[in-house]
Length: 114
Length: 141
Image 1 (cartoon, rainbow over the protein chains, first blue to last red):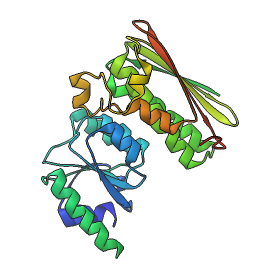
Image 2: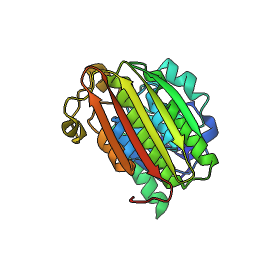
Image 3: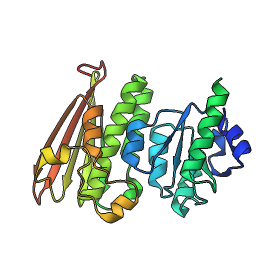
Image 4: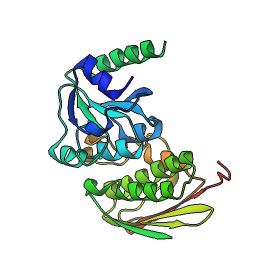
């Protein structure tokens, strides 16, 4: 499933990083601890988090994630958004909680792989 | 090749800059992507440590044909008990730093896992020097 497919299905907000919407999502990781994400997320996974500050961009780009999904209806901080416009990693938003978003996306990815 | 970057205590906007520059260089040199990933994780964590704990610091990356050597030298509070600091889950990060998603006590263990050699020298109230070496032929990894 591509990032843009997920955006359509779950009606996600695209804050920036439109260039990366065609990336194929290989899996996901849900965490707000940056070291945990650095240690465990793999390239082309979707990162689900409530973090909104600019350090999430550094982690997302260093690990080449497919996209970052910010949960609970939060938006990226101003600096995050400014910096994010220069990057190819999409920053997405949803009003769902991390639990609900993770569950639904897990199901969608599982179905896509069947 | 030698690369040098400056880090400033408390300035999280610069964290990850050195890592992303080094990542670009290693990619250009066509180093194994798995090795690049490990180097980048270790360097990022080390950058975070300097910014989260020290007053200022420098990153020096030295590239040889067969390895990359990273040295992070800071002026700061130092680490009184290095084995304790190395244990997973132990952190002295401030509340503000934790709110940003750091300070889980995973930085140093992540660094150790992702490099071939890690040495830490520290003097309380003076500073800390972290040296990391990664071999491109994955010696010992």
